[in-house]
Image (cartoon, rainbow, N blue to C red; front, side, top):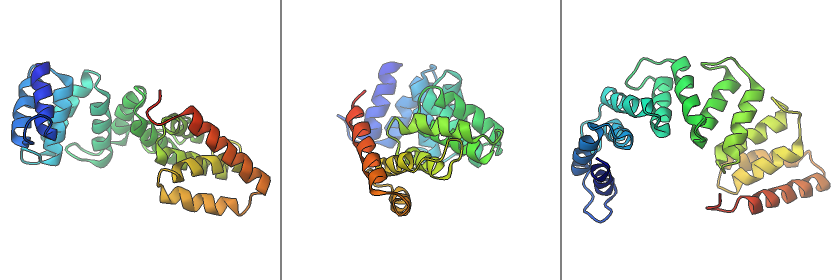
Length: 218
C-alpha cells in the first residue's frame, strides 16, 4: 500500500510520470482503503480541492478523519480547519480547537499559530493571552512569518507578556524579511517610538536569531 500511495503522490505532482489527478486519486484510494494514513490525507485533499474527483467537502472530511484518528498531523490540522469554518461538518469551534491542538502538539507551525489565534480571541477555548503567546512562539521559532508578526504584536501591546519594544521590533523584522507586509508596517510604526540604541539592539537580536536558524537547518 505504501508503493500505491507513493505512486499516487507522483501522479499528483508529475514526478517521473505525466501529472494526472485522476490516476493520483486511483492510487491514493487503493492505499487509503488499506489504511494508509498518508494516502487518506492526500485523498481528502483531492476531494477538498476537486482534483481528479468532483469537489466534495463531506467526503474530504471522511478521509481526513480516518487519517487524523491514526495520528496524521496534517489531517488533524485539516480537520480542525474544517470544523472552524464549517466545511463538510457543522461549524464547531471546540472541535476545531481539539484537532488543532493535536496537530500543534506534533509541531505543525500552522496549527500552533491557529490555535494561538483561538486562545487570543477566546474561540473554542477560554481567552488566554499567555497561552496564545506560547503557541505563537512555538510557530515563530520554526520561522513561520505570520506567527512572528503576531508575537511581535503581543510584545508591542503587552498582551500575555511584558511590553517590550525591542523584542516586538525583532519579531516584526524577522517576519518582514520574509515578505510579511503587515509586519513591515508594524515595524515602521514601532520604530517611531524607539531610541536608536533600542533599534540597534533589536537588529542585533534579529541577526543572532537568523544565524541560529539558518534556512533548511534543524
